[in-house]
Amino acid sequence: QVQLQESGPGLLKPSETLSLTCTVSGGSISHYSYYWGWIRQPPGKGLEWIGSVHYFGSTYYNPSLQSRVTISVDTSKNHFSLRLSSVTAADTAVYYCATYGDYEYFQQWGQGTRVIVSS
Amino acid sequence: EIVLTQSPGTLSLSPGERATLSCRASQTISSSQLAWYQQKLGQAPRLLIYGASSRATGIPDRFSGSGSGSDFTLTISRLEPEDFAVYYCQQYGSSVTFGGGTKVEIK
Image (cartoon, rainbow over all chains, first blue to last red; front, side, top):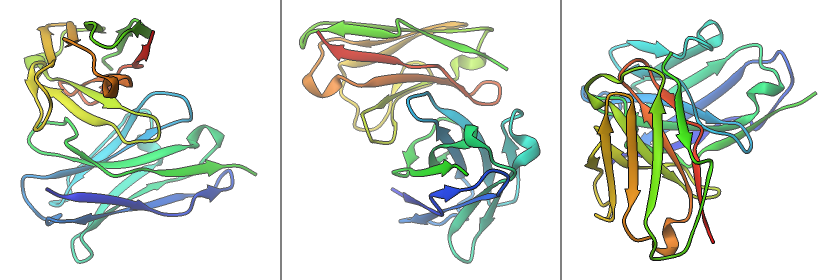
């Protein structure tokens, strides 16, 4: 089964752009059956889906974040990425990458990466 | 957006007891497209149940899911020490949303 590992800066200032990468191992990001997603969890709170992507290029975003989010796939590096613009303190969270198949229940998760937004 | 409300917020039980967790949706979830996850402190969530009642690979049979429409239940038949955690429901019938979670704590 695939394994996922998030990476990226852990500290950002307000108004900056958050950029995270999820590296996939044990399988190809180009597998037609897989979709790749991002979920976040603010400190002490529940889970929020950010969006998902298929290697064909199809993207699906949470309507509440859509105006600030871009998710993309790099098949040459077997990873996918999240960009979230104009961050505020409300974007402070643990960010997880995850994968699913035909239906959007997340079968495999990365360990998560903590992002803090603070001036 | 489909809002999922989980109850109770906290469930205090002893090992060996039965746990019943509820997840109620603000509208009908098509084709029972509901999943349950377990999350332990400092860890990523782990998929337990999908399709409302199908156990994920490697999940013990003391975990069971039921329900349809807008009312769903996760039951843990006999709590083991490792089952004390936070549980989330998630719907994927219309976009993706998660419930607020139920914490199962040791009484």
